[in-house]
Image (tube, rainbow, N blue to C red; front, side):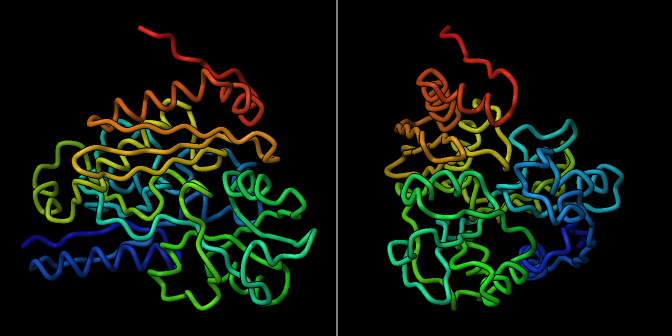
Length: 311
């Protein structure tokens, strides 16, 4: 068996994910090494993601190492991976998905409803901010950057009354002690791909594709393909107020998607069911644009958003 080199970010969660994949590959007899690569997103830690606005900010440098042959595969949180991969790359596997929901964490309060008026809530995401504001317009929502440990430390120190984090990362790291509850996906629509891992390789690398095929979850790939089709249609990245969550039931994909303005005054939801993940996602995205999502996204992007014409 060949020695496989995995490219990964150096955060605690990214390393857990890379080591998880490495362990599964070693169990198949492969020799595996980890290469830690610092990305643009890792270097910019004091600015809210929405203000950075760089697509691929957590993946670009890893892809450069992959293209140069310095690593053989890359493990990403799927929600960090742009919907349009740069030329020369492909996703070899979407792993079995962890919990896609967002979690409510607090030291003093047991739920969102228990937070006092004007409570300070930390989140790194405009998507979460908008949906929180719709549920509780009185909350004082503040940016929250840093790795999971840093965010939890800020909560423990009392800098925030509550914070919202992805359940998947907390469960993977065994850091669930401050979770007081979960938002159901129809209440707070998750980020596209939340809870899923993507394994990226060089386009046409059939040896790597075959070696990684056992890690691919067809249902989770179909669901996340649908979510990513919604996001692609809307032209968004990980830093915009767009959410989508899909699941496969009885051979069909069921999806719900959200576009919101950051203040939470307008939160548009659209859903659908169908057998073709890409077609369904595109249809839901186009419907949202026609219902007025284009105007919301124009304000966020600062430019015009094209509304697709019917064929």
